[in-house]
Amino acid sequence: MIRFLLNDQDINEENCAPDTTVLEYLRTKVEQRGTKEGCASGDCGACTVVLAEATNGQLRYQTVNSCITLLGSLHGKQLLTVEHLKEQGALHPVQQAMVDLHGSQCGFCTPGFIMSLFALYKNCDQPTRADVENALAGNLCRCTGYRPIIDAALSLAGKGASDIFTKSEASTYLRLTGILKQHPSGFIEHGTRRFLIPTNDDELLAQLQRFPDAKLVAGGTDLSLSITQQLQQPETLIYSGRVQELMQIEESASTLKIGAAVTYSAMQSSLHKYFISFADMLERLGSLQVRNQGTLGGNVANASPIGDTPPVLLALDATIHVRSPNGRETFPINTFFTGYRQTKLPASGFIESIEIPLQPECQLYVYKISKRLDDDISAVCAAFSIALKDGKVNDVRLGFGGMAATPARALKAEQALIGQSFTEQGILAAQKALAEDFSPIDDVRASGAYRLKVAQNLLLRAVLEQDNPTHEALEVVQYA
Image (cartoon, rainbow, N blue to C red; front, top):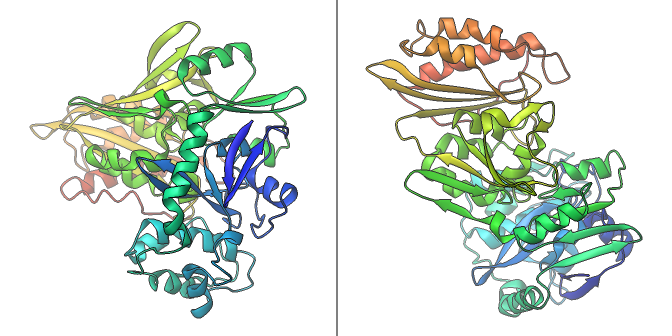
């Protein structure tokens, strides 16, 4: 059984399909239909809801896309929907601001915008324009009515985030911690199908051995698409979001170790300390709703050739820590990807953490090229770690995504750079060598010729930025 709060109501659910999404549950089971279905793939934000979770003595409010959030992941959390925002018949301050400043257009996307603004209201008392745009990047308004919506968000600055949720926060915190204290793990069963929620890595390993065909669910931002778009019905789902060992971030003098179930949002502040351009690139990875759910371990295990984090981890020479029935093993990320969406992850195994060596002598450049700025998939993602000695390239790793069947390093281009000056003239051989490293394909996002030219040009961009690095991985290159 899973236990959670739906707005202010205690919910116990046991017998429902393990692949039930939160959106499906809201609209068909409990008939709260203020939350809308748009794309069913986590892109449009019409289905945005807010999850409140007890963390470090207070509630943390985060937006998620309910269309790709599986019901079982709600165990021990509070699910907040647009129906619950009003207080004694009066609109919530966020709702009232949208009314006063004419932020609602046709109205279909409005509940999702309201919930995104509600989370911003709870988390940021003095939002800047950049804060607002970040919060709303995953919400699409088909009426192009962003100006009044942004005005509504900015009008809430300094209001103190005072509302009914502030008044009830202490009691809600106790209710949620009480659930997890009495019922730390949970499950859903429906016939022969199941959703399991282990709480430690021993339990996770045992469940993977018992159900070797199980699908491991972290954020579900990719796995859920196989359910909503391809109508797959996994027999067994095992959720890693309650496994404490996988949710730790460890910082030492020489490495940064990130647990496999740590979300992008949770790891961003640590990355900012050591790898600014990596942290900045995360602003381009999906939307805030996606970053609040998606995990670093999931992105690596997924092994997509256009995943955004593997090229950076390749450039940073990261190590993958794995646990399986064979015991604990480590793999250099450069050898971890073996083919299209294939890795060296053993059967019934899982990634425990990703360890990144700190390299203060290296300059890191990270670039994501896509058709639009926010919430888009890479055509090319590139990351370069470069160390100079006496003006010459002494150490270099070039990681690329979108250039081959797997994320990969450009080994021949690296060799061509060693000993050369990092100048426009010095990189010419490396730019030519990229054509030997990669033969990118044509697809709907870009042609192979375009990808190769972009990869070569990004080396030049790094050269031009080296004396005045902007760390702005946020620039988008539009296709001609």
